[in-house]
Length: 371
Ligand SMILES: CC(=O)N[C@@H](CCC[C@H](N)C(=O)O)C(=O)O
Image 1 (spheres, rainbow, N blue to C red):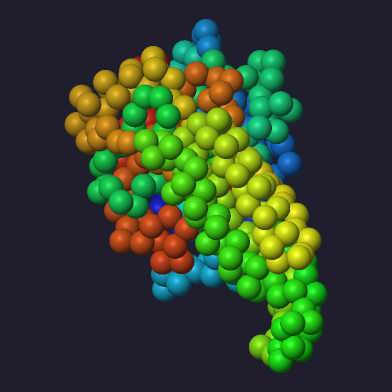
Image 2: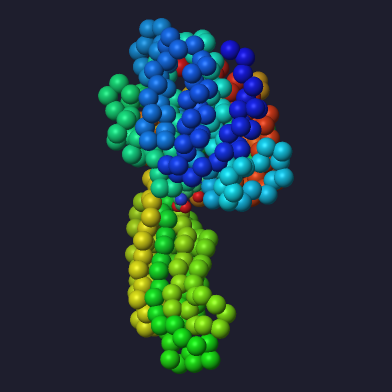
């Protein structure tokens, strides 16, 4: 079936939706699937996600391919003709590309079945609160559990044609971080009668960064990012409450434990020194993305010889991906796909080069044919 992948990407780009609200996205994909030859397809939905099995000619195994489908709470500033129609939401992490590529590969194999069965997983809520772990427990079971699994993530920093990958750790362990401070508000002119949570929050942000510089082994790595601070009501009232929202990244589970323990102690210290109440919520946590030796090596060997792509052996990154939960249970790998955008992931002006879609679809269909 001839298919216009650029059009699909643009259609999906227009309708970004947050985790577990991907209703239009799900409907769009379901409609697309209904246009494909149905003889070999088995389709089921899970929440806002979709699973599509393509029956092979004489299956010995089930080969899995996963894409995420959610967008981010960002107001788009690309100025593109096909910009987001959803105010305050954007596909700023490339999931529109990821879905389009998955549909491109799926379409090929719906027309040209191979010996083995294929499973395409359209997973909700990667940006949060996470969909991979729940999908694994609830739907990727029995004869829906793949024997191997693959996935990709766009990489704005690499040129189109680059496939960046490594064996072992690719993405970090992550945990969201929400800290609430509650003190005593009051008149801006009478600080002595209050417990000012803006001042407490300012100290807390600075102290949190000392965990990275003073507690984490300098030869290890970790990140604490506070991406959002809110607090107070108006300029001349001392703030009764403040909230810090952020994320923690570590290269190991032990590193995550250490950082969290230190955060808890630092927060307790702030509560004592600023005479306030403080609470911590870790939101969602993602397990590291760890590429299995054998399938990753086989893929790297393939890419190295592939005419239309360039292999780049990259370092691990502090990004997170709940695909890590799938790789914890199923052998496989994730790789970075070069899309050459001057603006990076999670940026309101991210604009990946659409030529990368065809690169990925050709590479992955050719690769899957070798499995
Ligand atoms: C690839 C990517 O950018 N993934 C996200 C995953 C976010 C997980 C969670 N919401 C958190 O912030 O910890 C990332 O920010 O790395």
